[in-house]
Image (cartoon, rainbow, N blue to C red; front, side, top):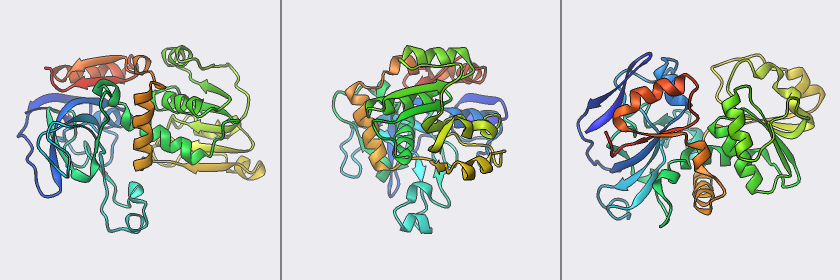
Length: 322
């Protein structure tokens, strides 16, 4: 089969790899589409601590079951939950397997979905409803991340919301917040093409946004963390969505003096996946603004270059082509 393989810092290539085989508890999926996300870019840049050269990338995956598996008929459209939990640690034994102490991921710890096929745990396959286009459904994984962040925030319909960072996750947080009735949603974004994407989706990008009771930091950028509490209204909530590269400066005095709540969020649970499916099937999320390119598998190397240069918002790989 053809697959996108990471060869070390700055190197990805399309290689011939052995086709995966079903094994106890694991099923084979014929990949339709797979997204490239910020984690994939970090691996490409050589910045991810667990990825090893030779791994097949990609964890935003939709496709079809290659054979009947776990009660799902062959040929059924499915979303692939890429999370790999150990089932043994305290979080796993207390219904927190999404933050397993040894959490792994398809596309990092085992071969991922930037390929014509992949093997995935049967329990991670979610059958999709009829009529949900797979090119739209490929956004389920990042939408589930956004759903989890919104649930963790405790935002209410009457709340104003501010999102720091108009990348794909930030935009999805804004869209879901709007769908739940939040009264006003603003963005901070220094890159003009991303700010313009937020405007196209109907959001304001003010030069100086007012403090909001609920703020989502979707950047993970060390330049943001020192001042990010300044965007939060006194007594409000900051949700840290973007993954930071280790310790970064953060104003804990401001947290204490103004009694801010700081909430972390990492991945998602099954209710977030289900909410993502509903949101995408209902049309409240417009994929045409978020997905800036869809390219054949054979053009994956160029797609990474474009994303790394900041020229794209969301690139989808069509695994059936190239």
